[in-house]
Image (cartoon, rainbow, N blue to C red; front, side, top):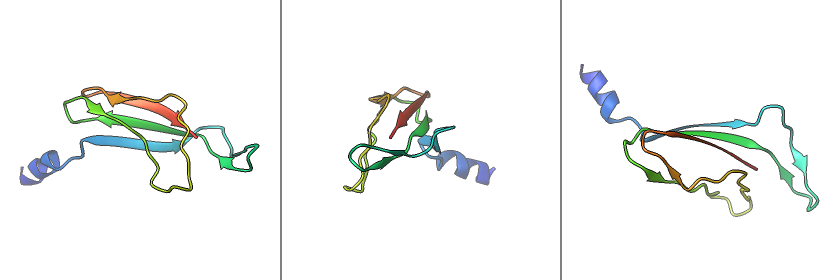
Length: 83
C-alpha cells in the first residue's frame, strides 16, 4: 500500500512520447539545413488545463510547428507535429 501511495503522489503531471514521423526521412532544405519531421503525443494528467509551449534550448536549432497548440486540456491529450 505504501508503494502504491508513493507512486500515485509522485507521478508526473504530463506524459509524452516523441517519435520520428513514420515513413519520413531527413530533408535537405534550400538554405542548406537538414530537417526531420517528428510527432509528439502529450497526455495531461494534472486535472487542470495547462498552457503549452514547445521551445528549443539549443540556439543553433529551430523548431517549426506544423499544428501548434496553446494549451493542454484538463485530463486530455494532444498530438502535434514539428520539424
